[in-house]
Length: 326
Length: 235
Image (cartoon, rainbow over all chains, first blue to last red; front, side):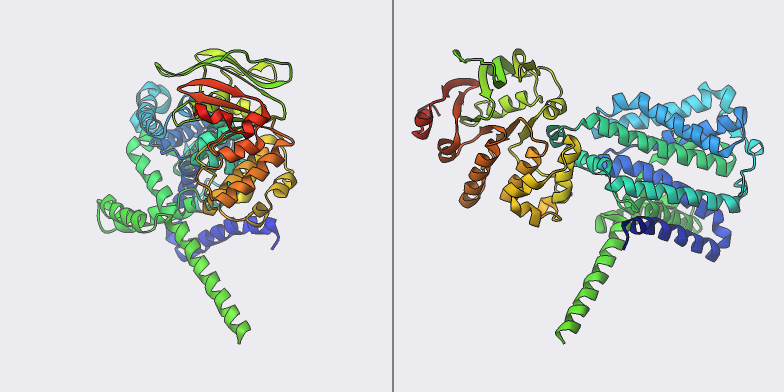
């Protein structure tokens, strides 16, 4: 099959799956929209964790930075949704330029802890330091300022779902391209053996910094989409207790894979949704299921799907061989 | 070491080099020279400082004193990746390839770094790599990994390839094949090799440096003496 068609096939299957879910469960549109946005957020974390080998407890900080960038734009500057998303991504990029020189020289454990500290700093900044702009704990409301978008007014949840699906499709396509590109291979090789990469002639710091920037920009984009979806933001979005959610979703989906983040987001939010409907401390059950998944299936849901597909293929091959022999 | 002739066509010149690990001095007053197209071996017992010297030339350690020049230009304090880009490739002792990547992806990494996408010289020297092109590098045997590492090193036509104990732990017939490859590579590239295998040294070395306790104690440049392993008494 044509390579270009193959490269778009995976993302398209995921989008079609989500559209089918949307019509099978029409009253779950909020949940499905959250899965799509959360997938983009997990994809960002997967760049750090799966491609560069960094575990970050600071992703909520980057998410809330994106969300507040969009919210502040809506509240004080304009109502264009595309511009808000662009502002969030640019702020994410600028933030990565400031932080990468320090963070990308750290070992993973220090990186993890400093990122946790960044979350605490972020909450303080948005809640106290910028209270005149962000309204502190009351949150920043701006839904009324958002203007209609041409062709499809994404201010309505039904339309917004298709809008975020389109963004996910583009993100998955580019993510797949990145995975097979020089950058993707370099990042994976840097994770495996940074010293050897240096022997070959790679600037490992630069590779890590690029990966880190991609991760922050994706988190900021997800933050902006959350802000647009809810029409308001408050500092709790950036609390470091929420960092575990994106880490678990990355692990459940399959670390370092292209499609793992989507299945991780769907699996994690699905478990949370189902369990929380019959018990308030959903974290207990989700925690146990996560431990089982990670011990028994450490390549995550995507690894399971790949293994299943591999088994089917080998069975088909065997059947063909038997037929030929007959 | 004294009496090193720092002539004009030297590829690498190391002059009065001192290297420390923190406060611990490990290399003392090292001076050596590697000319273009030479095959130079570095021998010595474990702990003599051979790998430290290699890592210092490759830019992973910075000298406390002394100077390292590449084609007349000082590379003291230069980052390891920049030295690699200047044409000095270092194949580490541990034979580590990128195990999760395929042979093809490993070679691609070298191509991306050097901009040289012509793999014909690699396949001409190591035809087996062409057969194993889609195999995960982690599944290769020790000899195949060494071939891959050497293949990756020669992409981009480097000036100098430094190999740290390339034959260590390999079967005798693989070592023989590698010795042939060393000769082939040396036609276009200067080789600087840490090696314990004396027959190989006797066969292909143009010059041998012996190290002991962080110092170079002997430089042997006479082919006849090398073939007779005259330097062995210092090991």
